[in-house]
Image (cartoon, rainbow, N blue to C red):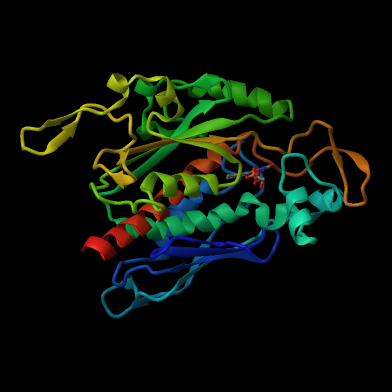
Length: 361
Ligand SMILES: Cc1cc2nc3c(=O)[nH]c(=O)nc-3n(C[C@H](O)[C@H](O)[C@H](O)COP(=O)(O)O)c2cc1C
């Protein structure tokens, strides 16, 4: 059984392959009367789109979104109607010949072998369905989710570690992310990181990275214990992104090294009588329910598997082959992963908000 649908009340289904005519998604369960036009979606897609700098793949895709259904202008502007919203993005720069020689061979680190083993058939062109081209559909759906959440929920992500180079927690500045081509969450690291990534790129190699996520404005109460815990669903959403190999919520793995005194977030009353947490090791989730603190997570991306170095593999004919993955690739996939992390967070949270509303009003 395949699963191309994510979410419960706010539910997205994505479709399409890397080198097919188009990709897209159907967003079902979006409440009615939310203003929505293509202009709400396009700027987010533009952040993810390829070809924007020398640090990302040179595939040139316009990534122009079209809303095919689910909105209507009844005289007061275009709004959602409560019916399925279908979003489509045409593929315009497929170069299937780049992938000709890997039609039979399995590229190391890619999904080729696993798809072939499971289905007995696969669209090898650009990775077909397993290609991260699919993440454009998530970003489009995420833009709708953001509209559902409203402006009080602020979702921000940025690269906080590039290979061995890490931005100290206290130096993370999400405001810097969209002012540099690396989506780095600090202006200071950019010159050194650019030099480092240029070296990686010129060597035909690749490197992994960590993307940090911060969401503010989520009130206490979202999340559905026990099996729909908010942190579990956030982690599942992030792990479903191509190339993601690890997710930490709050202090994450570092919590294993902390004492109870250092880890448990103490509480006091603020001047307005409302609760105040003195730290946020929990990453904004207690018992699977949002606590009203910022939601924080870290998402680890593996290095791009398509590299220019000759690699050992096998093919469908049971032969050993040596393979060099040509074509156009990102030296660090995490950079374009930043808007995807934000989109998945929005999709998880819109669903959590609607389910919270459904259960407790
Ligand atoms: C935005 C984005 C762009 C990506 N671009 C590439 C790429 O150019 N080359 C590549 O080898 N992998 C790329 N990937 C990763 C692959 O899609 C992914 O590693 C592959 O499908 C196998 O899936 P898995 O790593 O989740 O197991 C990208 C991932 C993301 C999130």
